[in-house]
Length: 471
Image 1 (cartoon, rainbow, N blue to C red):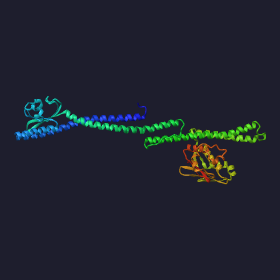
Image 2 (cartoon, rainbow, N blue to C red):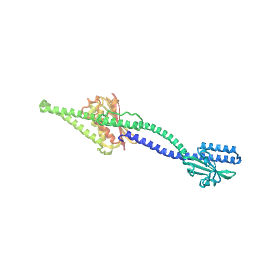
Image 3 (cartoon, helix red, strand yellow):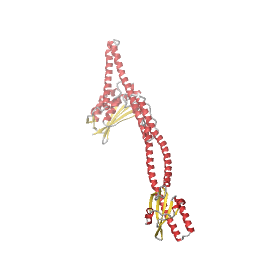
């Protein structure tokens, strides 16, 4: 029965509303019964007091006409209050009856139990058949009759309980009609509300199964701004991430295959050429040097991949120590001296202070500077400029490396940290790189809980800036 959330929501909400109406109906019927009985009691008591006034007038002006008017008014009060009115003297003898059907009781004596309490000056309220006088259950309200401060008799107003219950039933019937209409309206609202909750969840479930089958481009439609809408947005964001991861996985496999295939094809071709003597003996040394270079390239690629995997897995522990970043940059520049001179690059370095001590992993930061300088030299135009600056504030030291040259297109900046990413302009020029340098740089800086930024203008310059903890 409850195999899906729609049926659960529909059933639970409907049952809750139904139980609420049942409890409300029980309380209403109970309170209504007491209320109607109290109201009836008040009406009978008020009528009894008016009859007391009429009786006093009858005693003062007793004559056939007044007595006739008295009986007519008594019948009128009985009809208006839907009760049987009995007037007795102080001996318990019935003097008048509001209903002609009971005239046979006039002149008869009530039992002492019926009138005794009232003739003592007390008002009474009883439910019964008034000592067997009536065939049905009645509510009896009895009041003493006074004349000039003396009790001269009593009046008993008897209202049939079925008449009182009929009022209760009519009101309760109206409540049930209203409740039924409300339940039907609530059921319709709950039905659509449940569908508005369950349908998006079904759609998300269906989309999840579709994505699980490898269709990462599937998305759910966001139809609201509530929690369900937020869940749909979150799901779509997750699907975007999964699609990006899948694209990265495919690109990674494709790039690794490409990076491995080229040197391996070169090595295989040259070795086969040497073995089958297609390549003459006097050129063996030349081609073996090419094989050695490609082997070293493969070795760098594998080492970079292993290092990157360890960094991303959190398996690299930082050896934090204090050192002068200025000195590290000077040494790095000297290492690139030959390549800088080959392209006639002008290098300028600005250090805010003679010494800038930082707290970081020396090997990691050396690798960062080496990779960024390598890129700067590689992509700097001939006769171009490389500008290096080190500045500091109270907490951090900022290292910036800028090179003039081809630059990077704005739409490509967000991809430069991806593994194996190379712009079309640089791929043909970069035969030695692995395409992992910037990914490694990013991971090293992230491990230090620091930031790295890049800004570039295509055809003019590229600048990388990273921060380190100041000592």
